[in-house]
Image (cartoon, rainbow, N blue to C red; front, side, top):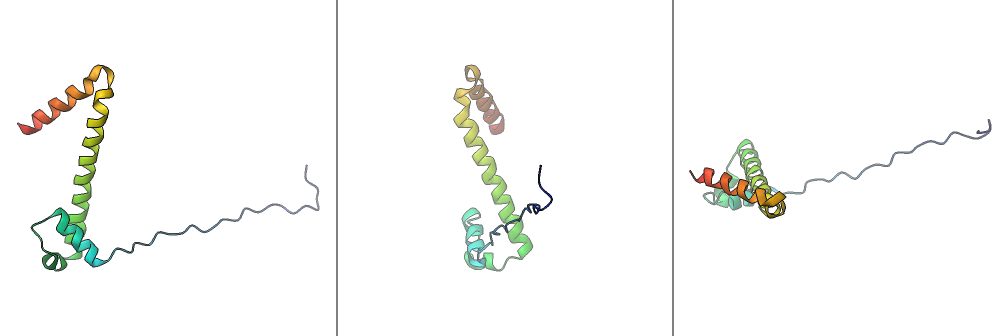
Length: 97
């Protein structure tokens, strides 16, 4: 039990450092040029913000799909009786047509 003279303990919240994006426009344009080689840096700089966001979001999704496929490829041989390898092979054969 606590005595009547003791002050209650207060929880003090600490501030959390917020990561501020320091990406420059030039870096965004360069990223667009990397993922979409048909654009030059000059052409990318003339795109609207809406188009830049769309292109970058699409590139991120494509990159995520590629990384997921790599992860599945690495894990497939370790599945039960190697069934993951057969599933992946069938999947990619279907993708090829």
